[in-house]
Length: 300
Image (tube, rainbow, N blue to C red; front, side, top):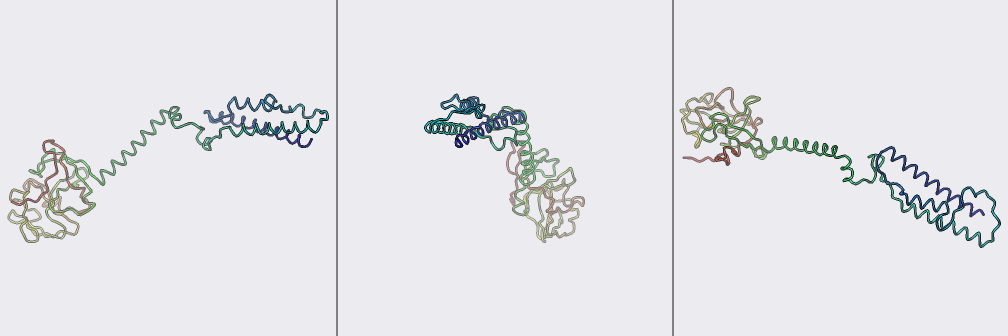
Protein backbone atom coordinates (compact mmCIF):
# COMPACT_ATOMS: atom_id res chain seq x y z
CA UNK A 1 0.00 0.00 0.00
CA UNK A 2 2.91 2.35 0.53
CA UNK A 3 3.67 2.40 -3.21
CA UNK A 4 0.04 3.19 -4.03
CA UNK A 5 0.04 6.00 -1.49
CA UNK A 6 3.21 7.39 -2.96
CA UNK A 7 1.63 7.43 -6.43
CA UNK A 8 -1.48 9.16 -5.08
CA UNK A 9 0.68 11.82 -3.47
CA UNK A 10 2.48 12.33 -6.77
CA UNK A 11 -0.85 12.82 -8.52
CA UNK A 12 -1.87 15.30 -5.85
CA UNK A 13 1.36 17.23 -6.39
CA UNK A 14 0.73 17.29 -10.15
CA UNK A 15 -2.72 18.69 -9.57
CA UNK A 16 -1.36 21.41 -7.28
CA UNK A 17 1.24 22.26 -9.92
CA UNK A 18 -1.54 22.58 -12.48
CA UNK A 19 -3.51 24.92 -10.18
CA UNK A 20 -0.39 26.99 -9.59
CA UNK A 21 0.31 27.33 -13.32
CA UNK A 22 -3.26 28.34 -14.10
CA UNK A 23 -3.26 30.87 -11.26
CA UNK A 24 0.16 32.23 -12.21
CA UNK A 25 -0.92 32.62 -15.83
CA UNK A 26 -4.09 34.44 -14.77
CA UNK A 27 -2.11 36.81 -12.53
CA UNK A 28 0.30 37.62 -15.34
CA UNK A 29 -2.55 38.42 -17.73
CA UNK A 30 -4.15 40.69 -15.14
CA UNK A 31 -0.83 42.39 -14.44
CA UNK A 32 0.20 43.01 -18.04
CA UNK A 33 -3.28 43.29 -19.61
CA UNK A 34 -1.95 41.55 -22.71
CA UNK A 35 -2.50 38.15 -24.31
CA UNK A 36 -0.12 35.57 -22.89
CA UNK A 37 0.75 32.01 -23.84
CA UNK A 38 -1.42 30.02 -21.47
CA UNK A 39 -2.75 26.50 -21.01
CA UNK A 40 -5.48 26.13 -23.58
CA UNK A 41 -8.91 24.82 -22.62
CA UNK A 42 -8.34 21.48 -24.29
CA UNK A 43 -5.18 20.92 -22.26
CA UNK A 44 -6.90 21.88 -19.00
CA UNK A 45 -9.83 19.65 -19.87
CA UNK A 46 -7.50 16.78 -20.65
CA UNK A 47 -5.66 17.17 -17.34
CA UNK A 48 -8.94 17.39 -15.42
CA UNK A 49 -10.21 14.26 -17.14
CA UNK A 50 -7.06 12.42 -16.18
CA UNK A 51 -7.18 13.64 -12.58
CA UNK A 52 -10.95 13.04 -12.23
CA UNK A 53 -10.84 9.60 -13.75
CA UNK A 54 -12.62 10.42 -17.00
CA UNK A 55 -9.74 9.40 -19.22
CA UNK A 56 -8.49 5.96 -20.09
CA UNK A 57 -7.44 5.09 -16.54
CA UNK A 58 -9.43 6.36 -13.54
CA UNK A 59 -7.67 8.24 -10.76
CA UNK A 60 -8.61 7.66 -7.18
CA UNK A 61 -10.50 10.83 -6.07
CA UNK A 62 -9.13 12.77 -3.11
CA UNK A 63 -12.36 12.23 -1.19
CA UNK A 64 -11.78 8.50 -1.29
CA UNK A 65 -8.17 8.55 -0.11
CA UNK A 66 -9.17 7.96 3.50
CA UNK A 67 -11.92 5.45 2.69
CA UNK A 68 -11.09 1.98 3.73
CA UNK A 69 -10.67 -0.41 0.83
CA UNK A 70 -11.21 -4.07 0.70
CA UNK A 71 -8.19 -6.21 0.64
CA UNK A 72 -7.34 -7.08 -2.93
CA UNK A 73 -5.27 -9.79 -4.40
CA UNK A 74 -1.65 -9.18 -5.37
CA UNK A 75 -2.66 -9.15 -9.02
CA UNK A 76 -5.26 -6.41 -8.42
CA UNK A 77 -2.75 -4.30 -6.46
CA UNK A 78 -0.20 -4.54 -9.23
CA UNK A 79 -2.86 -3.59 -11.80
CA UNK A 80 -3.82 -0.47 -9.83
CA UNK A 81 -0.18 0.49 -9.48
CA UNK A 82 0.34 0.16 -13.22
CA UNK A 83 -2.79 2.22 -13.94
CA UNK A 84 -1.60 5.06 -11.71
CA UNK A 85 1.86 4.98 -13.24
CA UNK A 86 0.22 5.32 -16.63
CA UNK A 87 -1.76 8.34 -15.39
CA UNK A 88 1.43 10.01 -14.17
CA UNK A 89 3.05 9.41 -17.56
CA UNK A 90 0.02 10.95 -19.28
CA UNK A 91 0.22 14.04 -17.06
CA UNK A 92 3.93 14.41 -17.73
CA UNK A 93 3.26 14.22 -21.48
CA UNK A 94 0.62 16.95 -21.21
CA UNK A 95 3.00 19.24 -19.31
CA UNK A 96 5.75 18.60 -21.83
CA UNK A 97 3.44 19.86 -24.61
CA UNK A 98 2.62 23.12 -22.81
CA UNK A 99 4.23 26.27 -24.41
CA UNK A 100 6.86 28.02 -22.31
CA UNK A 101 6.63 31.78 -21.64
CA UNK A 102 9.34 33.99 -22.95
CA UNK A 103 11.74 35.33 -20.33
CA UNK A 104 11.12 38.87 -21.48
CA UNK A 105 7.39 38.74 -20.72
CA UNK A 106 7.68 40.34 -17.28
CA UNK A 107 9.94 43.09 -18.61
CA UNK A 108 8.05 44.08 -21.73
CA UNK A 109 4.48 43.52 -20.64
CA UNK A 110 3.89 41.19 -23.58
CA UNK A 111 4.58 37.52 -24.14
CA UNK A 112 4.95 35.68 -27.43
CA UNK A 113 3.72 38.49 -29.66
CA UNK A 114 5.52 38.89 -32.94
CA UNK A 115 6.89 42.30 -33.96
CA UNK A 116 4.02 42.69 -36.43
CA UNK A 117 1.40 42.09 -33.73
CA UNK A 118 3.11 44.60 -31.43
CA UNK A 119 3.18 47.20 -34.20
CA UNK A 120 -0.53 46.63 -34.88
CA UNK A 121 -1.35 47.27 -31.22
CA UNK A 122 0.85 50.38 -30.95
CA UNK A 123 0.88 52.05 -34.42
CA UNK A 124 1.16 55.62 -33.13
CA UNK A 125 4.07 54.92 -30.79
CA UNK A 126 5.86 52.99 -33.49
CA UNK A 127 5.38 55.85 -35.98
CA UNK A 128 6.63 58.46 -33.52
CA UNK A 129 9.66 56.33 -32.68
CA UNK A 130 10.53 55.80 -36.34
CA UNK A 131 10.16 59.50 -37.12
CA UNK A 132 12.35 60.46 -34.16
CA UNK A 133 15.08 58.06 -35.26
CA UNK A 134 14.95 59.42 -38.82
CA UNK A 135 15.13 63.04 -37.65
CA UNK A 136 18.10 62.40 -35.37
CA UNK A 137 19.89 60.46 -38.10
CA UNK A 138 19.23 63.23 -40.65
CA UNK A 139 20.53 65.88 -38.24
CA UNK A 140 23.72 63.94 -37.54
CA UNK A 141 24.31 63.31 -41.23
CA UNK A 142 23.68 66.97 -42.03
CA UNK A 143 26.13 68.14 -39.36
CA UNK A 144 28.74 65.68 -40.60
CA UNK A 145 28.31 66.72 -44.24
CA UNK A 146 28.39 70.47 -43.61
CA UNK A 147 31.42 70.27 -41.33
CA UNK A 148 33.50 67.63 -43.05
CA UNK A 149 32.25 67.15 -46.62
CA UNK A 150 30.55 70.12 -48.31
CA UNK A 151 28.12 72.98 -47.84
CA UNK A 152 26.22 75.50 -49.96
CA UNK A 153 26.99 79.19 -50.29
CA UNK A 154 26.04 82.05 -52.61
CA UNK A 155 28.07 84.87 -54.16
CA UNK A 156 27.20 88.45 -53.24
CA UNK A 157 28.78 91.29 -55.16
CA UNK A 158 31.14 91.45 -58.11
CA UNK A 159 34.56 91.09 -56.47
CA UNK A 160 35.21 87.73 -58.18
CA UNK A 161 34.16 88.68 -61.72
CA UNK A 162 34.64 87.41 -64.36
CA UNK A 163 35.05 84.04 -62.62
CA UNK A 164 32.00 84.27 -60.34
CA UNK A 165 29.04 86.61 -60.49
CA UNK A 166 26.51 87.98 -58.07
CA UNK A 167 23.91 85.39 -56.98
CA UNK A 168 25.90 82.41 -58.24
CA UNK A 169 25.16 79.35 -56.10
CA UNK A 170 28.17 77.25 -55.15
CA UNK A 171 29.06 74.02 -53.41
CA UNK A 172 32.06 74.45 -51.12
CA UNK A 173 33.90 71.21 -50.32
CA UNK A 174 35.96 70.61 -47.19
CA UNK A 175 37.63 67.29 -47.91
CA UNK A 176 40.53 68.67 -49.96
CA UNK A 177 41.93 70.66 -47.06
CA UNK A 178 41.69 67.67 -44.76
CA UNK A 179 44.00 65.82 -47.15
CA UNK A 180 46.36 68.69 -48.03
CA UNK A 181 46.99 72.41 -47.51
CA UNK A 182 45.39 75.08 -49.71
CA UNK A 183 47.22 75.79 -52.97
CA UNK A 184 47.90 78.90 -55.03
CA UNK A 185 44.92 80.04 -57.13
CA UNK A 186 42.40 78.03 -55.08
CA UNK A 187 39.12 79.92 -54.61
CA UNK A 188 38.42 79.72 -50.90
CA UNK A 189 35.66 80.72 -48.49
CA UNK A 190 36.51 82.24 -45.10
CA UNK A 191 34.57 84.32 -42.54
CA UNK A 192 34.80 88.10 -42.61
CA UNK A 193 32.35 88.61 -39.74
CA UNK A 194 30.19 86.21 -37.77
CA UNK A 195 27.43 86.47 -40.38
CA UNK A 196 29.40 87.25 -43.56
CA UNK A 197 31.91 85.10 -45.44
CA UNK A 198 34.22 86.15 -48.28
CA UNK A 199 35.13 84.27 -51.46
CA UNK A 200 38.63 85.09 -52.73
CA UNK A 201 41.52 83.54 -54.64
CA UNK A 202 44.77 82.52 -52.94
CA UNK A 203 47.75 84.46 -54.31
CA UNK A 204 50.49 84.19 -51.68
CA UNK A 205 51.39 81.04 -49.72
CA UNK A 206 52.85 80.64 -46.21
CA UNK A 207 56.48 81.75 -45.94
CA UNK A 208 56.43 83.74 -49.21
CA UNK A 209 57.22 87.45 -49.63
CA UNK A 210 54.39 89.38 -51.28
CA UNK A 211 54.38 92.92 -52.70
CA UNK A 212 52.25 94.92 -55.13
CA UNK A 213 54.30 97.42 -57.10
CA UNK A 214 53.34 99.41 -60.17
CA UNK A 215 50.13 97.43 -60.53
CA UNK A 216 51.92 94.07 -60.54
CA UNK A 217 52.03 91.29 -57.94
CA UNK A 218 55.49 90.18 -56.86
CA UNK A 219 56.08 86.84 -55.14
CA UNK A 220 59.56 86.45 -53.63
CA UNK A 221 60.77 89.31 -55.83
CA UNK A 222 59.35 87.99 -59.12
CA UNK A 223 56.24 89.08 -60.99
CA UNK A 224 53.42 86.55 -60.63
CA UNK A 225 52.23 85.17 -63.95
CA UNK A 226 48.52 84.51 -63.81
CA UNK A 227 45.40 84.85 -65.93
CA UNK A 228 42.78 86.02 -63.46
CA UNK A 229 43.29 89.72 -62.74
CA UNK A 230 43.00 91.43 -66.10
CA UNK A 231 43.55 94.98 -64.85
CA UNK A 232 46.56 96.67 -63.34
CA UNK A 233 46.08 97.04 -59.62
CA UNK A 234 45.44 100.67 -58.69
CA UNK A 235 45.41 100.31 -54.91
CA UNK A 236 48.16 98.07 -53.43
CA UNK A 237 46.96 98.75 -49.90
CA UNK A 238 49.12 97.26 -47.14
CA UNK A 239 51.00 95.27 -49.80
CA UNK A 240 52.70 98.43 -51.04
CA UNK A 241 55.60 97.30 -48.90
CA UNK A 242 56.90 93.76 -49.12
CA UNK A 243 55.31 91.54 -46.48
CA UNK A 244 56.40 88.09 -45.38
CA UNK A 245 53.61 85.59 -44.70
CA UNK A 246 53.64 83.44 -41.59
CA UNK A 247 53.67 79.64 -41.64
CA UNK A 248 49.86 79.47 -41.65
CA UNK A 249 48.98 82.71 -43.49
CA UNK A 250 47.63 83.25 -47.01
CA UNK A 251 47.44 86.40 -49.14
CA UNK A 252 44.14 86.53 -51.06
CA UNK A 253 42.71 88.78 -53.77
CA UNK A 254 39.45 89.03 -55.69
CA UNK A 255 39.64 88.44 -59.44
CA UNK A 256 38.08 91.88 -59.96
CA UNK A 257 41.20 93.47 -58.49
CA UNK A 258 40.01 97.09 -58.43
CA UNK A 259 36.58 96.27 -56.92
CA UNK A 260 37.52 93.82 -54.20
CA UNK A 261 38.00 94.03 -50.45
CA UNK A 262 40.74 91.50 -49.75
CA UNK A 263 44.15 91.05 -48.10
CA UNK A 264 45.19 94.53 -49.23
CA UNK A 265 42.75 95.96 -46.70
CA UNK A 266 43.70 96.07 -43.04
CA UNK A 267 40.21 94.97 -41.99
CA UNK A 268 40.74 91.73 -43.91
CA UNK A 269 44.48 91.22 -43.89
CA UNK A 270 46.15 87.84 -44.19
CA UNK A 271 43.92 84.77 -43.92
CA UNK A 272 44.90 82.15 -41.36
CA UNK A 273 44.70 78.49 -42.29
CA UNK A 274 42.47 77.67 -39.34
CA UNK A 275 39.57 79.87 -40.48
CA UNK A 276 39.33 78.66 -44.08
CA UNK A 277 35.95 76.97 -44.43
CA UNK A 278 36.62 75.20 -47.68
CA UNK A 279 37.28 75.36 -51.38
CA UNK A 280 34.71 76.64 -53.92
CA UNK A 281 34.21 73.56 -56.04
CA UNK A 282 30.99 73.49 -58.06
CA UNK A 283 28.64 76.14 -59.45
CA UNK A 284 25.09 74.77 -59.37
CA UNK A 285 23.24 77.93 -60.43
CA UNK A 286 22.60 79.48 -62.88
CA UNK A 287 22.02 76.20 -64.67
CA UNK A 288 23.61 77.35 -67.92
CA UNK A 289 26.86 77.97 -65.99
CA UNK A 290 26.73 74.66 -64.13
CA UNK A 291 30.18 73.18 -63.67
CA UNK A 292 33.44 73.24 -61.73
CA UNK A 293 34.77 76.59 -60.56
CA UNK A 294 37.68 77.57 -62.84
CA UNK A 295 40.93 77.18 -60.94
CA UNK A 296 43.36 76.53 -63.78
CA UNK A 297 46.43 78.76 -63.98
CA UNK A 298 46.41 79.49 -67.71
CA UNK A 299 48.99 82.08 -68.70
CA UNK A 300 48.57 84.39 -71.63
